[in-house]
Length: 459
Image (cartoon, rainbow, N blue to C red; front, side, top):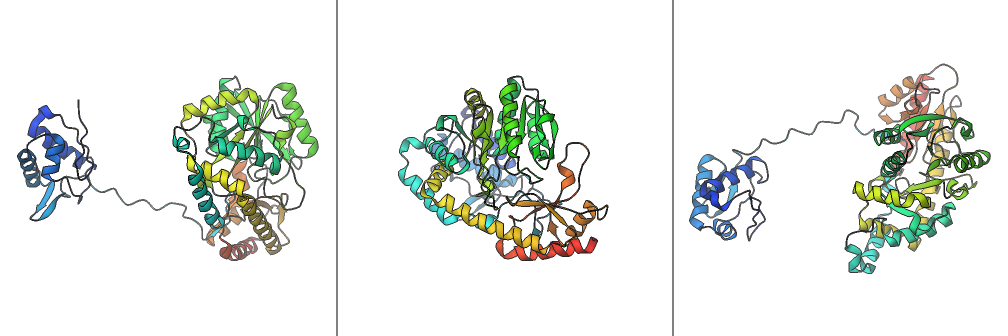
């Protein structure tokens, strides 16, 4: 059986059998170089150290090194360590290709927060406190449900800020909404749900993830009052009731009651994506749909809009009958957020720094939305409530077309998205989806002016 060995000076891996002797040792070192495990220019273990670790005579290693140097695999020099030569090594990887769609100069793409606003100092302080307070046992294998500290903190926070009915035992920590919808689709499909409905329009990424995990995806129309509940005929549905993505409408009170009543009467599951519920600017608070039917609605929240997408940190508040099946599916998936990030998030909420950060961002995003609306020509019709990180712009009449406005934006290096890409089936409306969160604070004015110029060019 092949053995792994480490020298006293550095760790190296060689697939070498003692019975293969000097010839086998030379072959093992050649393989390590060819496979790139011993990098060109890197120092190799001394003959004394490698001989000691392998349990062979130093002279054997010396002769192997000399043979490999003659072959061009190693480079020796008097008074210097032996190093891997470039000859015999795998060729260097080709240059990384330039992205076909480089990051725009003016970033008005939707679904992105202002990353420069990430509360670095508060996060660092929360991490330090978490490390200081955590017992050694906290760094053992994690709970299948996620950190107990975070789940307890979330139960209180979600009840206070979003009206969610939750206790820690019904909360599972996940790696964002993509992870959540993949797990939920898998579990629901295993329980007989061969179809999951999505709002039409909606984000295609989540529809693709759902379909990849078993259920087929169907679309349900959305009007000015939200999803058309009377058109539902599926065992599960994914909704964005606080701020429909991308149209920006709120699920009306009558529709909220109708949707939860439909779920209770039919036994269907409603998956609530509360992706930006913290950012409502018009003082009309709208709580979570989950509070109306906690045993039929799965509430999903994340830090992707409030902090940063790269954290990959989210949570599900589940009906009791789904807790164990979803937990088992999460264990099988093997994916979960880093423990330290979970503990830091709990500290950030407990300290009040998370609320302070959200309030600062809410004020900044509201100001940006107001500035954007003030800069738009009168010919443009903004759609959506005063909330979140995006709005939809529509152009009355037949001209300009969506593609013409997007082309004008691209000529000015403005990143925007078209509404046409979000429909299931044929696009029913055209328009631009403008995200006002992504641009750094100093760049937002320039981005707004560039967008104004692009619209004037084609109108």
